[in-house]
Amino acid sequence: MRPWPEKAESHRLYLGRVRDPSTEEVLDEVLACVMRAPRSYTGEDVLELHAHGGEANLSRLVGAALRAGARMAEPGEFTRRAFLAGKIDLTQAEAVAEVIAARGERALRLAQAQRAGALGALVGRLRGRLVEVLAEVEARVDFPDEELDFAPATRVAEEVAGLEREVGALAASYARGRLLAAGIDVVLVGRPNAGKSSLLNALAGEERALVDASPGTTRDVVEVEVDLDGVRARIADTAGERDDGETVELRGVALGRRRRARADVQVLVVDGSVGFGAVEQRLLVEAAAPVVVAWNKRDLGPPDGIPEGTAVVATSATRSEGLEALRREIRTAAGDPGDEAALAVSTARQHEALAEAGAALGQARSALAAGEPPELAAVDLRLGIDRLGRVLGEGVDGAVLDAIFRRFCVGK
Ligand SMILES: Nc1nc2c(ncn2[C@@H]2O[C@H](COP(=O)(O)OP(=O)(O)O)[C@@H](O)[C@H]2O)c(=O)[nH]1
Ligand SMILES: [Mg+2]
Image (cartoon, rainbow, N blue to C red; front, side, top):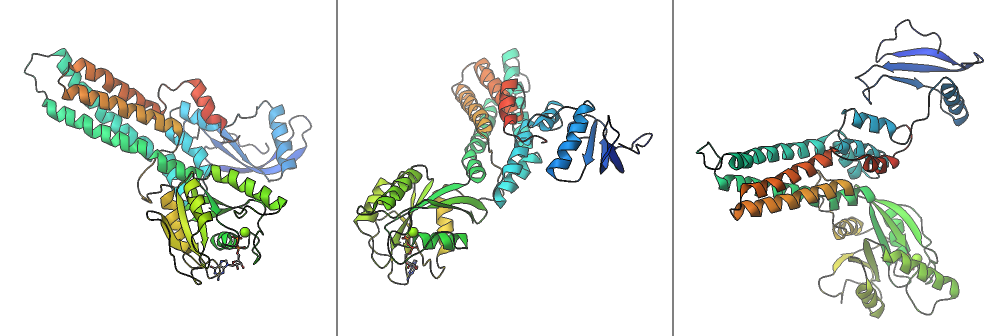
């Protein structure tokens, strides 16, 4: 790049031109920034060029950089280097991918908190407390008969039980973390003309599915991504359930059944002017996921005859009534407790390590409670410490890191 300062200052933008290393041709005018180690994302010396967008321009610049001796980064390589350099822990590295993939406000907030280190800090604190407990227990192993200043055995056991609860709660938060990250798969089912397509359009806030007064209009599965108050949901509208449809519609019915099989929540749309009948009863019984009944066309008839214990919301799709309650019931049925502030783990890897830590703590707790030799509890406590360390990325082998960073895009 020309002109190039004698000694480029770190973290300062320079304006200059990039030339092809062999032909000297000016390729672009760019901003360049040097970030010297250790004050960079990866902890190494980094040079960043800010060029004009556009695929042709950028690929020519990349080509010139490659000819000058650079190589392409692998997916997630920058974040992997940052992790290996100790700039961030593994929960933060994983959160980088989640920030980018986040759909929906709450998923993004959770990912950003994790990227900033909130989960890592919490796990680090839990591990610190566990290390102290282990020291107490080991002191008893080393000096069993001495009247040292031991904490009472019951207090140690209580602390282990407390840690077990906290680690267990964090492991259990995976249900929410996964829900936020993956979104909710919802499927609308019900007899033709109940108002499924109208309800989908009302939830989407726009005309997405065909609505018609004659039954059997929806033949394909129409899927729309909808924001359920901060949680993403994919809502699928299916062909109505009836047994005498024509061929095309029957194919739609079959597609709808398949979509239903992988839904997190089924919304059973009842035609309020017809009522809850045999078709609805069958759909309710056959459902493989939690069911929310949307008693639609409530302007034509109030809810009636719905089996007890079924979540019901009265809606009017055409008047946009009852939609807020329906969104809430769908989230609840999917298992969203809605607690904003709490942290949650979001990857299977974090969940597994925490679950193993919790199990080890449970073993240690019962060994202590049963008055068994402290050596036994110490083994489990060490295992718990190891597993909490793994959440942070300690002792995690290359294959696990490969699997994590494969999900990343190049340049992250
Ligand atoms: N009165 C009333 N009519 C509705 C309501 N929701 C849908 N409809 C009408 O019911 C008919 C069938 O709606 P549609 O959404 O196509 O039903 P689907 O076959 O279940 O997808 C259309 O004429 C809609 O305008 C509602 O809440 N109240
Ligand atoms: Mg329809």
